[in-house]
Length: 236
Length: 236
DNA sequence: CATGGACAACTGCCATAGCAGTTGGCAGCG
DNA sequence: CGCTGCCAACTGCTATGGCAGTTGTCCATG
Image 1 (cartoon, rainbow over the protein chains, first blue to last red):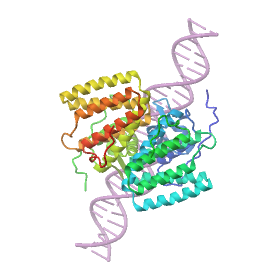
Image 2: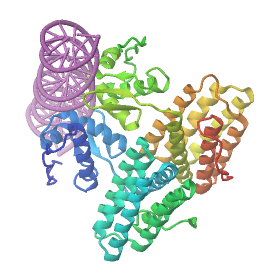
Image 3: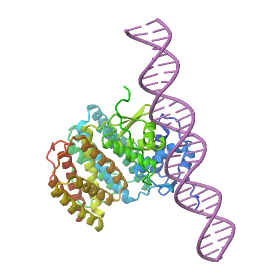
Image 4: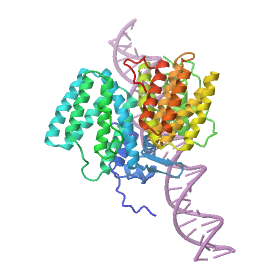
């Protein structure tokens, strides 16, 4: 079959940033994948992507190698590179992996988080409270993003930051897969976020880890990417 | 200061494999880092590494970008790339991360492992038993490697396999850092391995996860990369 | 002696060109 | 009509060359 699949071309890279072309291509491609364009199975050729982005093939190639390491594309040598299939099952697995990783991240953060970060978290919590009352899911998503990113950075662990960045990308993919508005339990999420901050403020790694892990797993369940708890979940 | 640090050159890449040069350079460099040559702080220039390996600079560059994603090197744009500092503290963090990841891997494996893999694990257990009685640490290390790699593969999750591959590399680094023979508790490790296989055979994800995580954390403690449990560890 | 500035020797980064292996289709033979 | 073999158009992969930014050294100047 020919490539008749009405492919929407990628806009050329804006030269707004000072980042390397390889880095920009990496982010752009990852974004394009989780946003839904470039669906699973789509063939990605270094040259075509390069011309669409208005750059050379080398940076694209680097980006593809990194995406391959993230598991978002698979490439058969001398055959081609395609967007990896990420079915509901694998999405669930990645969610469980993310839950575990967010857990240790939260534990590490609890050990070394400073007053400034705690203050920032308090501010984010206020925004979350307002957003929950107003039902502003968009603002909530943004605050949620900052919330977790801040905790990740608080660990000071680059490996954790990078891995969780990739994993959260998959989370976005899951939301885009679910047609329409995904179900959420706003008040419960807010309470959990409060509990996590409380544990962080107490510098209690074990408690922080348990609460964070529970929070992620529960949100995955209400979002439908994980089935209801096959065995009674631990109460935090 | 000049580069007078008696640098031992890397042997050119053998063309034994059919792997791409970039992949081979990636593995070679990672190996060289965890083995102790290319110590932390060593400057790594694409060109010099390329000439030492007898290849071009492009594959080396890809390898460096991937190593950067693993956190093993850091590169300042237009300034240079150096081997990342991985102190005892970060080694401990990475260990805790690995414990969590090995845990979920073991849980996933428990859900879907087949009879063949279980049989292979039984064979490995026998080798471990023999090695423990004979005190053959080298054979034990090899068996241990296969043991965990087999469980990783049993999950069928590429992200898990890749991440744990990188993490285990850091584990080797920890052993090479510790001068002389690192302390180990062979009988205890054997018993834990048996318990893990039993949980896998029972297809009990929660039990398998708890046991695997405990196993990793304990081995990290006896190896000295983690301090003795600051708070009472859960009994599996 | 101290200081500043220019030049050379790096560095990472990117574009171009071409290699070898794979695939799809089409002509030609049975 | 069906099958085989070849050829062109891909693919990923690597080498080469060169650009721009950084650094360290050395000489000239105060």
